[in-house]
Every structure is written in structure tokens, then in C-alpha cells.
Amino acid sequence: MRILQVTHYGSVIGGVETYAADLHHLLQREGHAVTLIHGRAPSGPSIRTIVSESLLVPALRPESGRWSEREAELRRVVEQIAPDVILTHDVEEAEVLHLFSCLRPTIPFVHVQSRYVCPGRGKFYARQKRACERPFGAYCALAPYWHACGTRRPWRLLTNLRVTKRWIETARRLKRLLVASEYMKRELLAVGFSEEQIVVNPPFVEPLPTGEEPLPIREMKRETLPLVLFCGRLYDYKGADLLLRALEFVGPPVRAVFIGDGPELPKLKRLASRVAVRHIVSFPGWLSRAAVFGFYRRARVVVIPSVWPEPFGRVGPEAMRQGAPIVAFRVGALPEWVRDGETGWLVEPGDVRALATAIERVVSDEALAAAMSARAMHIAAEQFDARRHMERLMRAFEEARQET
Image (cartoon, rainbow, N blue to C red; front, side, top):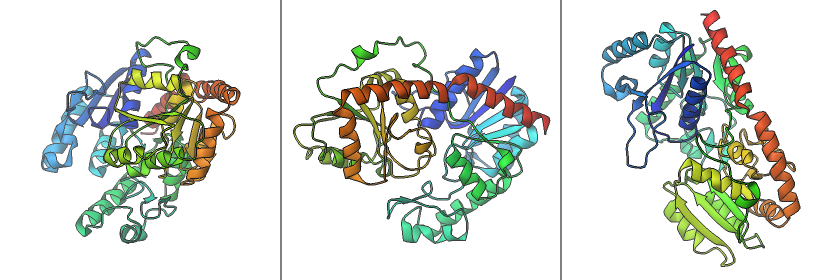
């Protein structure tokens, strides 16, 4: 099958692009012809491209020109590639999605809430630090002023409302949509999509990054202090500050490593300077994927302290695949794969003392940690298997082609 993947960025920014890269290689291994196009070129000396053979198509960007010119260029690209199916990843512009669907069977993978079912910050009330439970509607025009859940600039807010409304109207006419979680399925159902349209297909997790050799688990877990790991973007809603506050209530000394970068880094470093001296805290920045997997294998526990409703949370399944128990807040899709008491612990959002208690239970009980580690590896291998993912994906492709 000839498959065209479409992404906004040409470099790996987060979980969306990581999935697109992994899927690209998996499809190629399965004998499919895959082309990836993107609207923004990779930049920066340490930026990892999604795939080296991807094609930059500036017409995917709204600011690149008049729609008539962009439409002609996008038509030309699609006809030149001649795919059997188009798989888009967070293409938010309704006109582009509609054009693709007119040219070829098109399936959007809806990875996140923002711009698709929410005009703001991903169904999250920043002022109250809690999830929004309202579906998209008139209230979204007022919510940013009461909940700080989006821009309060009137013109920009109006634009965002229009983008979300038009995307929903366009996507409702498609035969199939893919989501990574039951949580995201519920969000689509709440804005009028049908049960039959939505295919839940959690991303697969490979045992190791391509080309990496596994190290023995026992060797990798040897640490002077139990390793508590955070991995992700350093934004306020990711909750790294809550993990630092929780360390104050963790009795046994630990080594806490925060992998990632973002606007919260200066604030987090100030908070870290006040953490009890029995703990060691470090911020190594972004690391290679192989290095991150090495940290997963050494971690006693991986903490996901997000307070916003994670639409999937790729870090967790990747860490579980390497044998790391998970401690997380009970938000979004996380309860779908964190099995409380089996593969880790779930605590109520924002409860710092409960977070500390859960962390301490894992770091202070080696037998419990070993049992959770084994269980996490087993469940991740079963739940996020590449073969099962491919079967669901190819079935969705065939259904979309047959019904077009």
C-alpha cells in the first residue's frame, strides 16, 4: 500500500512526531511505500528529524500564501505521490483536511485536544489547575476570562473558535478517525462524532530505539540512590514543580532527574535549590532517545505529575516497556494504562503528599518495585504491541478506502 503521512513539523517536537517516525519505519518494514510531508523545516543543531527522506511542503502552512496557490501546490504533491490513503497527524486547518479527503481516502489521527475539540489549552483550566469537562460550545468564548484556559485577546480567541468549529464540521464527514485513547474517543463523541467513526489505536512501543542493544536490567538498575525520573516538556501543566514539592515529603534519599526543557526550567531550578539536601536533583536537558531509554531501564520509578488531561502520555508506556513502575496523577488517559497497585500508583491530581507517599512506597520497597517492574514490562509488551497496532491501522485504512 502507498501511504502518505502528513505532519506539521519536520522535526521531533513531542509524542506526535515520535509516533509518526516510529510508524514510518514500521510501515516500511512491513513492505509499504511511505512518504512523509511536513510544513515546517527542522531547525537547530540538535534537532532530530522525523525521517531523513521527508518532503518539505510549505503550502501546509496557512501563512505561506493565498489559499488558491496553496491548494494547487497541495494537489500537485498528492497527485505526484499518488497514495492509496492519507494519514494526517494534527492537521488543524479544515480546508487542508477537506482537500485531502477529496483527493484520496483520508484518516486524521487526532492526538491532542487543542484546536480539534478545544480552542484553548487542551481542555485545561489553568487558573484552577483542573480539567475542563464541558464540550466545545458557546461557553468556550467566555472560559478564557474565567479559567485562563486560552488566549484572552478577542481577535485571536475568535480565530481559535473558528478553527475548532470548522475542523469539527469537516472531520464529521470523514469515514474514520484514529485516536490513541478512550479518553480522546469520549472527547470526540462529546462534540458530535459517531461511535462508528472512531478507532482507538494506542501507539505501539518498541523494546528499544532502532539499532540499540539492550543492557541487562539488573546492571542498568544499579544506582547509588534510587532513581526517580521525570521526562517531558517543562511547562507548568506538566507538573514538574509538584514533583519537586513532593520530594520534601519523601523520606529515603533519592536521585531525581528531570529530562527535558521548557519555559519553566529557571523556576524549577530555583525550587530544586530548596529541596532537602538528602536528595540529588539534576536537569540534563533533552537527551537522545537511546539515552532516555537507558534512564528508563535504571529508574526505580518514573513520575508523570501532569495536571492537565493527558490525551495519551507516551512517556509512561515507553518507560513501562523498559521495566519502570509509574506514579502519576489520575488525569486524562493515564488510568487506561497505569494499573493502580500493579504497574504503579495513581493519585488524585495536585495532591503533593499523596504523590510523595506513592513515590516512597516504590523507592523504599525493593521487592514491590521488582514486582511492579516485571508487571509493567509484561503489560506494556502486550498492550502496546506493534503487530496489534498494525492490524487495527490497516483495517481502518481498508475500511476508509472501501467506503470512499
